[in-house]
Length: 211
Image (cartoon, rainbow, N blue to C red; front, side):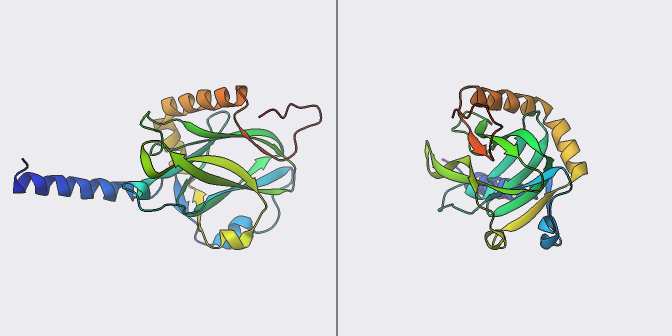
């Protein structure tokens, strides 16, 4: 049986862990002037992709600390999301792949890619990608996210927290997570190979659209 002192120590440790989980989402920062993120068209030869997640939680132990990381097919860090947030990134027009993974939502198996998307981006276009959620085994209201292309809607984004990547923080974060990023890329490529991915944009003529 726990003594009063031991029980108090456990409660203090739990509080400290929750505090650490609620710290700023690396490698992101809140946007000081949200309107600037979507001001004007993308630069010449590039497309803009907006990733967002709405807060779909019901009460569940641990849910406030969920984080959703988005990387490309080479392991480049595009950004990260927390519940009820969005970020935008300008990418070269053409073919891309996106993978999402969350250290907090992996079915007790450790970090793993939960979602994959193939994208065919047209220069000058703005796209929006929602991380939608569904049931996750073992947890009553926890989630496994997946990508879904949706119509752009700035009014919807106005209800969410705007984030942007901090380049210096992203570089340090990627270096310290290099092994994990390589593993996530391999998992994402495996999803693409078996057709388990979402689609964004129109694929080039003659390209396979199997999913």
